[in-house]
Image (cartoon, rainbow, N blue to C red; front, side, top):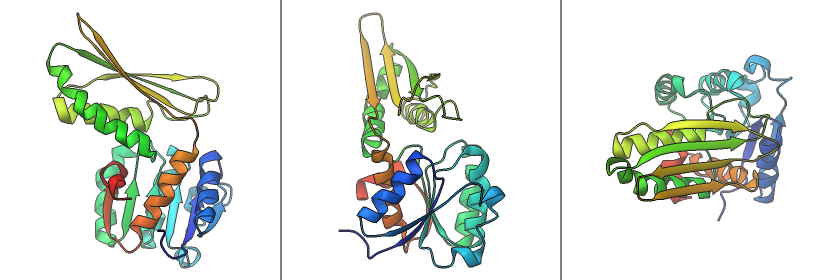
Amino acid sequence: MTNPSLKLLVLGPGKTGSLVAEVARERGHQARIIDVDVNHDAAWLTPEHLRDFDVVVDFTSPDAVLANIDACIRAKKAMVVGTTGWYSEMARVRSAVEQAGTGFVFGANFSYGVNLFFQIIKAAAPALTHGYSGHITEIHHIHKKDAPSGTAVAMQRVLEQAADVRVDITSEREGEVTGTHTLELDAAGDRIVLTHEAKSRRTFAEGAVLAAEWIVGKTGFYDFKDIFGQL
């Protein structure tokens, strides 16, 4: 069951942002997309403009997302952020969200399958303390601006937290690949290869809309991988 009709503001008119708006409308919500040209340096995101929206969904770019986040926090507006490349500022953003008393969901990847993949990787992590070496490879389309991908960094973090071993990442950019992430665990006697391949951006859009429905009426700072099981 979906929430009553929500008003979503989608930042980022690219392929994923457009799908977020499409999925939102399919689920009975209103969605408006704001082009980056209108919102340079978050200029459009004033309290007056944001007043009637329930949640702002950001799928922009690493060089735009922090200004958008700061503007929405000032307006005390709930956010769902699928853009990566800003995590070095995470502690500051978390503090600002908590001080403002608003709601915020971020995710390296909003795909249900990828977040299930994180759990599988966590279960495999003990191999790194039993003679296996690890390596992460991520492949994305040539238009992706950040490298390594946020998903690959999240995989690295999961492994480090579970096994206290830091695994290297190789990033490749080719064609229009939606996103492929592989963890290879290699030992003298055998090799384990775990791969998640995204076939469509729609899975990211669906997760983002579910997160937007979930955050309405809540306060706090949440990682999608910690709450996706509740959706």
